[in-house]
Image (tube, rainbow, N blue to C red):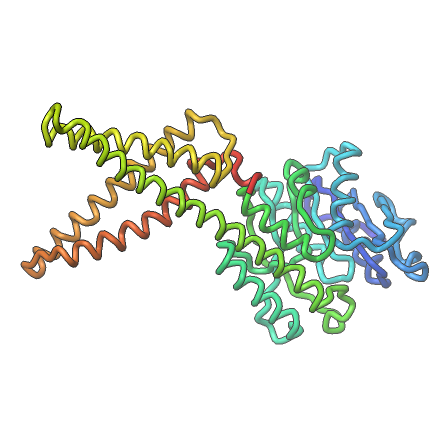
Length: 379
C-alpha cells in the first residue's frame, strides 16, 4: 500500500459502521489511509462470524468497536461518537462513511476539508438524476426530500446520505438524537433544523455497486420508521401552532373585555374620548403581557431570561403593527391613484390578507428569534 498524499489531509476522524461486510470494506479503509486519514473507527454492528475476518485488523490507525448483536446503524454511529468523546480525541470532528464502496476517498476528503473550513456539518449529497441510479433509491430519496421540504421546511437534497462531516462540538447533540436504525439519520437532520446547527451540501459522485443490493436498508420497515418521525414532527409543530392560535384568541378576547370594562368605569369620571384612549392602552398592555407569558411558558416553553425575550417581543409587535398599518395605507394610496376609487370592502379584505400573513410570520419569528434560546430543546 503506497501513500501518495497530494495535499495535507485535515485532522478528522473517519467513522465506518458496518454489518456483514464483504471485501469492499477493506478496500474502503485502504483508500482512506492512502489519501492521508490517520484515525479510523470501525464498528462491527453484530456481524455474523463468517463476516468478522472482513474487518481489517492489520491496518494501521484503525480502532475496531464491536456490538455483540445487531443494534442498527444509528446505534453504531452513536457508539463511535461516544468513543470519540470519551477517549478525548483532538481531531476537529468526524466524518461518517459507508463501508460498501459507495463513498470515494476523494469525496470524503473534500467533505472533511469543507467541514474544517466552515465549521458546519457537511452533507455529501448524491445526484439522483442519473440513469444508473436504482429506481428504489431514486424514488425513496425524492419522496423523502419532498416531504422534508413540504412539512418540515428543510431543504435537503439527499436525506439518507451516509457521508456526513460533523464538527466535534456538535457530537453531544448528535448523541442525544433518538433512533437506533436508519431513522436516526432522518432524526439527526430534524434535530439540526431544531437547533439551527449550520449545514452545507457538497455534491459527490454516485456509486452503486450491483444495483445497491448490499444495502441493509429495509424499504418497508425502515421507510415506515423514517416517515413516522416526520409525521410526529409535523404533528408536534401543528400542535404548537394551534396553541399559538389559542393564545392569540385569548389575548384578543381579553383585550376587548378590558377595553369595554375600563371604558365603562372611566367614562362617567373623565368623559368618552379620554376614557376610550386610556381603556385602549390599558387593555393592550395587559393583553400583550398575558400573550407574552402564555407564549413563553406554554407555547414555546422557553427558559430564556424574561428581559431579553420581552424586549424582542415588543420589537416584533411594533414592527408587525407598522407593517400592517403601512401596508393597508400603501394599498389604499395605490388604488386611489390607479383607479380613483376607495373601497372599504377591498381595504378590509386586503387588511385581512396582510394580517393573516403577519400572524404566520409572527409565529415563526417568535419561535426562531423571540423565544429562541431554549425552546427547540423542549419542543
